[in-house]
Image (cartoon, one colour):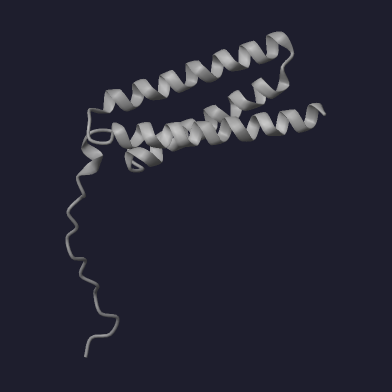
Length: 106
């Protein structure tokens, strides 16, 4: 039964982390980068608290849920923000056309 509860806890933590991370990532996508990094720190602190409680009280489902929350929460934040990090990375680089030299000259 402990294995089933651990699997359910991990899956639930992962689902909650992904949903919350993605929604919050979309919410901060047009704002300064420090908000994104602050949400990353908050997600890590929440997961760390859950892991400490889970390990301290022998609740493996809480520990597994916290690990799932951490992994998917950070990933959800990244994908919600637009798969980029930093302020200047939203500007697309200008590409110059590349001239390919001919193999044989006629």
